[in-house]
Image (tube, rainbow, N blue to C red; front, side, top):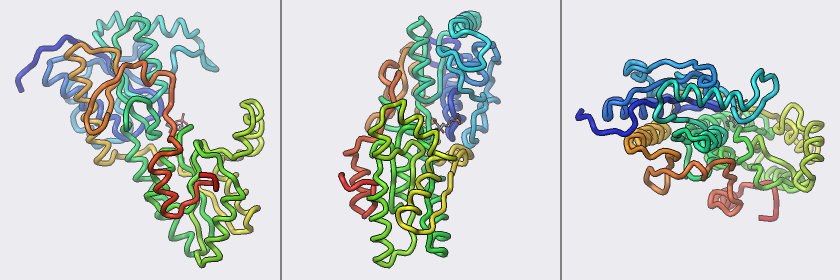
Length: 367
Ligand code: F6P
């Protein structure tokens, strides 16, 4: 392959926040294109921002990013270290952590730092850019909640796993004439539950953006039962909340949830359904299975495209940006766009309407 000109000669790469399928595909995409096409050197940083604080780094060679396209997790390791925040149990102050990052960035002679992560990671990237470092972000998360990109990689793999889980619950729900509640991840956004709920034919879907009314859910489930449908599937996003909680102020809600969300929201909703309808109800929390394993084809393609686009930005010296999917093309946005924000499901999103049109209850009568 012909070597092209590049402004970036050496860059560091890290994966931060919760892992997800597609991280290795993205690492491979960035590193292959940067190394083979532009002859850049790559410094792999271990365990997210933690590795840059501790200078836990090594130069990556082509053999390191070969054969990883299909692997789950991240070859670099990840952590939830947020250097701009002092966290419980921290031995260093946040200023010391930021100082260490800046010092090691300079010592390693990095022209840029490429950060693969969600909202927190890209926000930290933005703050480091404000401190004078060259940063490029890539949007990954199963939550699909990053502002500035139409999609994040990791989402479609989690969606496939969650949909299969719902399919499996269908048969056992049918055998026992039960209501089956499944709690999915998504942090404060309902993307994963909405999409998996539609893909799996959920009868009720509860997302944080639409506070639920247990009476409306009860009426829907009783109506289904009376019309001969003797089992139901209820998909609950981990961030779902009731209309009563929605009306509470932050402090009140926190206290209320500490008492009622035991062990988690899925169990609470299952209990509420049993009390409201008298129907036998079971809860399943899918948990980390959603984030594990190999990336699906869509995520491999998206992560690879994001990765090679990042290499092109590095070559041009276009720093301070996050690679993004916009419409049908790969583009980039200023890091200030995703910084400090999350992207909720708009209540007028076409998928909400799609769900309602096929008879799914979104937890309320008011939409
Ligand atoms: O952001 C991804 C995610 O899996 C969320 O869906 C979930 O709320 C959170 O991470 C779990 O975080 P942790 O890995 O720190 O338990």
